[in-house]
Image (cartoon, rainbow, N blue to C red; front, side, top):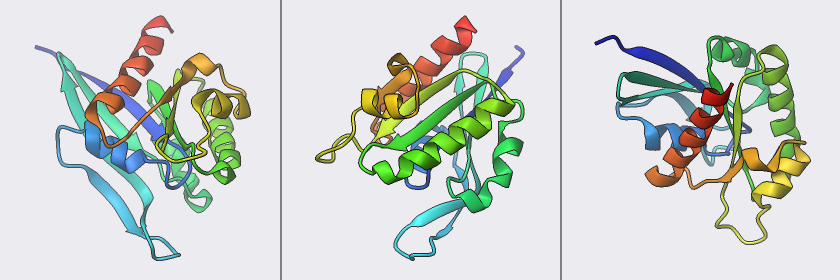
Amino acid sequence: MNETAIKILVAGPSGAGKTTLIQTLSQSPVVNTDVRSSTGNRLTTVAMDFGQLRLDQYAIHLFGAPGQERFDFTWEILLDGSLGLLLLVSGKDATHFPQARRIYDYLLSRNPIPLVLGVTHQDHPNCWDCKEVASYLDLDPAAAVPIDATKLESATELLVRLFELVERA
């Protein structure tokens, strides 16, 4: 049986939940390049994360891009060959929205692929909801999904939504 590989890019600002999402979805050990952030209080990705899962005859390869601007040179490399984009944005911190917009503009200006916006940290008080974040990014609210990157069901829903868009494209 032939196996078809599908590359999905997971991008977004630092702290949005990209590494966590890939760890939740991956059926194999996740390769990551996390180091202590300059503030020293959390880990941050400096090159990429990689995880994979299998669905029927498909091998889905998840590539996580670093969110910090100083690593933006990796974004185009990771985008190459991607069938879809999962853009994660934390709804608890609007100061990250301009960076999300920059990432979105950068990636889709180079390769207009199907996109689903995952809004994380929805359990925090005064969190921006999906429609508000989509509006800020000038995206169709139907492309926005609330997500808990730590829960397999929620992470899978995000991936399914992306595949629905890929199928229509």
